[in-house]
Image (cartoon, rainbow, N blue to C red; front, side, top):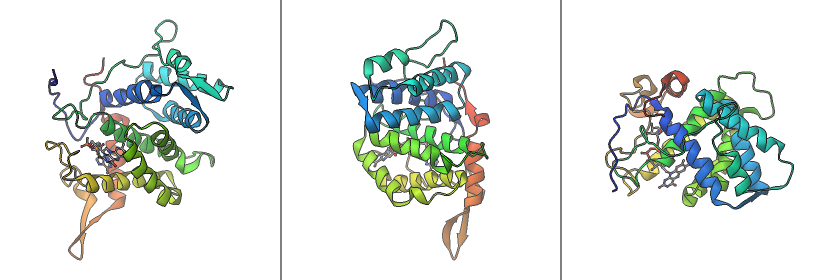
Length: 261
Ligand code: FAD
């Protein structure tokens, strides 16, 4: 059937089930579509997994999983890896150190009113917002990789692997225009927030919009009253308030474990 039970979700929370589903889908479905990885794709995968191993605030089994995949990728000396070799590494290991990631997807905060709405793209945005915010908690991030560490990983992942190629082109267009103007980890979190709002504005009212989850300029006033202001009768964002809100919303303390196994 095409219907799944509705899982009630609170918009003011982030759900670990969505984040873990994003990891599963990104690594075991999207990356796995390619039978051999070389060059830019291999670099993008290594970079993405390195950032996940460093910043993903996962449950212990999931962190073990990400670290073991990262270790393996760092040790790859060949210029190519096959999907079958990668698949072995992405298999859950329960024997010595449990390193486990759920083998299916469960959408909660990202559940759509129909199966073709929301889901993976929603969880991928959520994951990358969370990672940009996590990076702001490491204030002494050394010059290389610098403030673009997480955004660079996102850009590479989207360019090499994101199945929605039209989305990838749009995102690359925004990245080319202004990503390299980002000078700090705080600006990186705000850059992604403002670009996501541009996407929301572009998609509002189109057929990709779930009628039960209309595209908003986010966060709406009921989630963050302090984020909104009016100057000369025009709406303005209070970016300092937005940054504070992003840091609270995408913090480990705001992640709910409901519906994880
Ligand atoms: P999403 O937009 O996916 O947002 C997920 C959640 O993030 C929201 O529920 C909200 O909690 C939070 N959120 C919303 N806005 C912000 C913000 N500004 N800052 C921080 N958090 C926020 N679809 C297309 O049809 N065309 C495209 O060109 C396109 N480009 C995309 C590019 C990227 C990189 C990605 C990841 C997705 C893209 N998509 C595109 C998919 C689209 O953006 C949505 O992900 C999809 O339509 C599902 O929307 P949603 O309602 O679940 O909310």
